[in-house]
Amino acid sequence: MAVNAIHSYCFGRVLRVKQIRERSGESPDAEVLDYGSRATIAVIGGKWKTAIISTLKAEDLRFGVLRRCIPKASRKVLTEQLRQLQRDGVILRVATGVRSQCVEYSLTDHGRTLISVLTAMAEWGEAHLRAAKTDHQPVRLRHESQGA
Image (cartoon, rainbow, N blue to C red; front, top):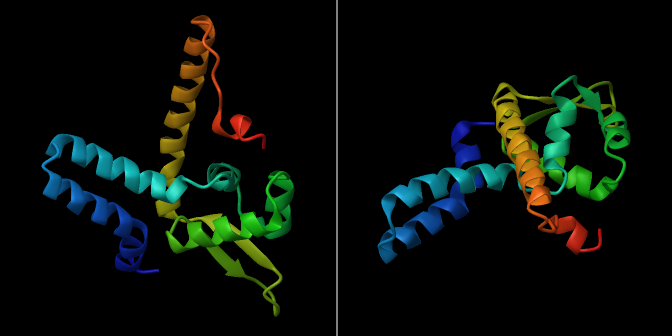
């Protein structure tokens, strides 16, 4: 997929928000940080996307194996998020054999750059949970409060 196509798909909403902020007179420094953060979250912001990326970092996997590695993800949601990651240029989908049922997913070089981002986010999250626990503050993860 061409970089321009990825850019227009991933960042269309972010660009519109950026334009609105420019018109409202918000700080440009905050805007630059916000723009990059929103662009990243737009790509990895699905419920199972980080699990998909983390699972594919070790090896290329067929859909069935990937589904067994992430058992709580429904077939529909996993398929949707795989398509979104493919459209964003993070993963590569290769149909092997005569039928399209034999499909293998792998991280692209661009997708591999997210591993360090996800590692840093996980480390920060663990430190945050430890700090909240020592402060005796209850920490609620979003999926826990939604009953999922």
